[in-house]
Amino acid sequence: MTDFALVQQDDLDRLTEMLAVLAQGFNNLPHAEPMQTDQTAMRRTLEQVARLMHDNYPYAHPLYAGQMLKPPHPVARIAYQAAMWINPNNHALDGGRASSTLEKQAVAGIATMFELHTHLGHLTSSGTLANLEALWIARETHPSLCVASSAQAHYTHARISSVLALVHETIPADDQGRMSLPALEALAKRGQLGTVIATAGTTSFGNVDPIADIVELAQEYGFRVHVDAAYGGYFRLASRLQPTVARHFDAISAADSIAIDPHKHGLQPYGCGCVLFRDPAVGRHYRHDSPYTYFTSDDLHLGEISLECSRAGAAAVALWATQQTLPLVRDGAFATSLDNCLDAAQTLHQHLSDSEWFTPLRTPELDIIVWAVNAADATTASSLAQRVFDLAAVNDLHLALIRVDAAQLPPSMNIDPGAGPVTCLRSCLMKPEHLVWVPQIWQRLTNAVQAAVAELPAAARQA
Image 1 (cartoon, one colour):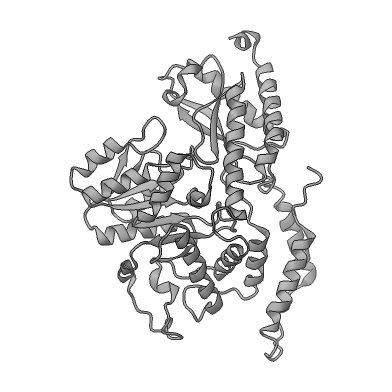
Image 2 (spheres, helix red, strand yellow):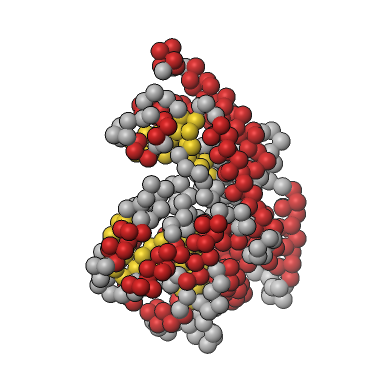
């Protein structure tokens, strides 16, 4: 990877140009001497920081195909860094006037992507906070009723429910990892269900809950629907989704609330989450007064519709700049990049399906793939997966691991369903560049599994 340029000179030039334009807006002020810093000490410290940061995986490179990590777009990085020279705080307008305006516009763009023509929403520091706000509103609007999520939903929903003193019910998942509709309806019939959390892309397998069917049940039984689209939400714009999956993404517009993470597929730096409510009237639950904060304008201060107080205005600036450069429209450059991720996952899935070494557990619905290493028993399959993971990393291919119950493995593997957890391999092909890098990924993966199998005792190899 000697030709991989982590830092592009063009990006540094654009940042310098932007800072020069930014400075022009404040050149009427009298000179103020900045705090003096020992330049030698600062240079020494920054060099040390740069060297310490070598201890990271190459997240920006296509050979990093492990966890859910996607590099920010250059326009997002540059806009964020330039905004940091101002360091706005988007809690109140006197802390971030321009950045608050850009946040409202950027959030409106995300709402339009989901066809929410009226909405209440704002950015958060993470998807966890976005989900927390949605469940807090669920508690305020449906007090004493429980919330429910699938067994494959993110673990934070149960934890957030505990923080909010909400009763949380876990709904079983079907054999494809999606929320079981019969189990959901059985729970709804008990009459104590206030909110259902549907997941638009689980973080384990990338499966999409049957959102359209959940919305229909909500209309029948009167519960709210919150969609956790933190990982998968932007696929609303993709054109290459399976028809059944696309149907459920189309139904997100009927949800009462949505959480989405621009710092995942939205090409933003950490942390940038977003929460949206279909009914602006839920803003009444945020009502509070701060006599020393909200005095500079009668316009809406974002802190008046947010549980968080101080938030980085630079995140809003970066998101707005990215959406201006790559509009959130179908068939645009941004949407095409998502289709590339879907195609990359399907291409790797086909390689895995045709291989004598591996068995994919499910056909990917988004851009996450999970597969097992073929072996005679669960213990050997787990050991091989760990060894493939290690050997691939030596050759600069970085994957992820996941423990899967043996009962979830395909019957063709002939693994005892009662064998307990089995270690499998997992990839998030979140970069559009992954599509053209699949041949390289596959070659390195094949080399790793062949080397791992060669290390086995002869009897185990024959089995």
